[in-house]
Length: 508
Image (cartoon, rainbow, N blue to C red; front, side, top):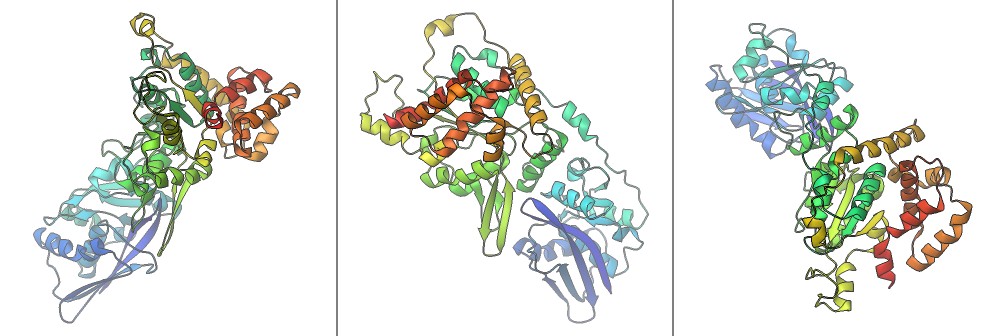
């Protein structure tokens, strides 16, 4: 007999529905899987055989052929275990009724018939809604994740026997229901506060500008100056995720298998801080079957790269494309895969390789210091809007009892500036000043009459490229938004230019 079961597979960050066709015919016992399966899918026959027997069903000693259609899509992972097992049981008459055609099936089988969670469930659920499938039968541990997509009946099952009983109408399983808006409303606030940072008023001002316009930042200062402390306090002052953004972030984490089972949705902006020994593939993504890297896991959040010059040259240069395009395209012989990577880069670096506390105490030669920071190429620096000098904190600032401004007050100003940008870019895909294209820069960032000479002098003295010129205007636009001004003034331009300290150092 022939049976068909619906399933799904992930292709990059998107998902496609798969038809699992199972044919049980007379002949010598055999189990063949076709349709571009990977090793995990081919090995499913052993898990399926053991699970069916250990759940008390009869495994047919006949010729079994499993076809995963369409055949030109590569199928990988263990999520096809459950649909293959149910297809065999349907072909042998164990599973009856019309429920089999109403649900998409996902799940990995244990040898005892228990159903284990799989990754990529959120993109698969979105594919079900897109293609008009109304139900999803999946592992109980993935139920919360799938239920954040409205309009889909999510049926969580724990064992193969429970799935068979439900499909035959002999057992009842309560669908999982979740209100995603309530999950976002209950997002836990980070306890990291800018009030804990002593001194560094200029750095805190620059990070507020970065948060208000989603600008990339590079902090240069000696060890212990507070660069990491400042970076970790940036996410709490960023705007909260919208539902659309939260689903986008959660989809990436779901594909990577990092979405916690007790959290069906990422409700806060991610903060990723990979070690400087990370490879290019770990940072950008890769593998024979492409997987998202750190830049994609930081989508719509912060990617913090401490000891930035210590990263490999290939990894640093690979950052340029996602910083410009907001996505990563990985090409392999089987095709290309795109992952979103609209992140905000925050880098930190010592002024020299030895990390000396001051220039006077530095034992490095000027050539050694220049060689160390020259590992940051001009194309990469052009894509970083704010270059900050973060000096050592003085003892008087540490010993003083006066706390700085709390993150809640800073965040209120950031949200006010973001509201202006939302109104400005209404009807477009742009959400912040840093994402403006050249056309929007010319439209929304007119240079004041008394600012042309200043900007021309800055470009000459700093050796700025056309991209660096636009970056200054974008930062100036954000500063004007924070001041509540409709037009950019020469004071806004002056402050934006002073955040190009590394350009001045390279020209010296």
